[in-house]
Length: 307
Length: 221
Image (cartoon, rainbow over all chains, first blue to last red):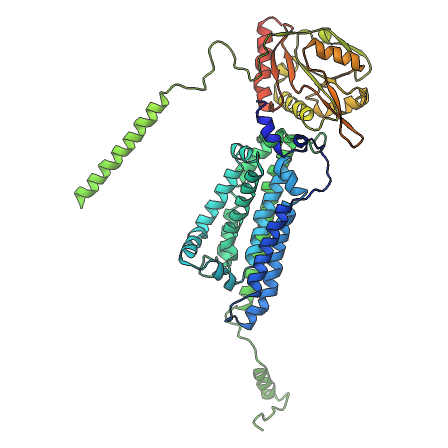
């Protein structure tokens, strides 16, 4: 048993003869990754195809805002302090990080992709075929929930947490699965499985079921499930690993469910507004018709516009 | 086409029957997780020789003398040498023990005493020790905290063969104390037949403590 702890403590300050403290520390690898994501996107955005319409060119600013917000939230969730706490100290921090990756960063980054950029990234026979397979709504739901259950499996997470590479892999899995999950809802390419408003609502409702299972285990377990978080130095005295785990479970179910409902509400109101704009039976009124009616009622003198 | 369909059906049935046969044979295999019939399988580490419960007197958190051997006679006793400023091992060990005891029935927790002896008496005064140990109370039971002079504590460590604690300057005006990170568990017969090193989880304690209490009861403890 004592051989386990050296592997688990490779992340911890005490393993490097450093006292536990809250002071900021640098993670240059994360900065480089964020700069690469943002820099690559901006380069593509500033080098559009020559065939773009004026409207598409104007739309780039709006898209850039969404994408940059996505990368910003990704950075906040990955860097100190949340990234550090998530990697080796608190299960609740790890859950919050995963939720930001999958429910905030991923959809924002997809919304930041204009159609022409998405086509350029997914161009090529094999990439397109892979995208068509992976982004099918049923497949996307299945992939995300397999990652959700698998990455929450104690044996797998404990093993991954022994190294920085392992935790990076887990984090990358969460982000990629989040992109796969939200693609059918926010796809910039219509023929690549973009769902209608109603279908999106059903899709989001379907996603609320599976997280209940791991969330229940986390919330109601009497003992800590993950050795990495159970044996970690306590961040606050008295904040036990069981309490931390219960908070993680509540975050997954209540927090995640709330975010999904907010997104569903936004989609619903957008659907409502779209239906209102295109309601059949109410043709748009033009000024010439109003002028004719008023002239027929002798309320105005209709001008002869032929002169 | 009828004969092809029938032929395919026979193949499917044959494959399913083969799978069933394999499953049944696998079920007949030896269960490698079966406990040995000779006794309970405890998860602690067995010391080279059983450690007798030595007699020493230290001061509890209320300032009263505490005779270790007399006050813990007849109980399963968990003895741990640590300190409240410990960044990792001590709170992890104490939390694991507390989590296990909070989930065990009264029949078990009432027969267990947890004793924490500080190896940092300079900072761990009675009130400091009490406040820290209160985080690890379980269902109305408190962890017993003991302090004393450095010589008294060193003698207590030596009585159980525990390596003496050593102060280490951390360079920022504070110090750490390197100490043995294992829990010594005494059964009611007055001997420690199990040591629990750092890294033991709450589920391990929850597995072993009822067995230790039962073992003590059956030995007339």
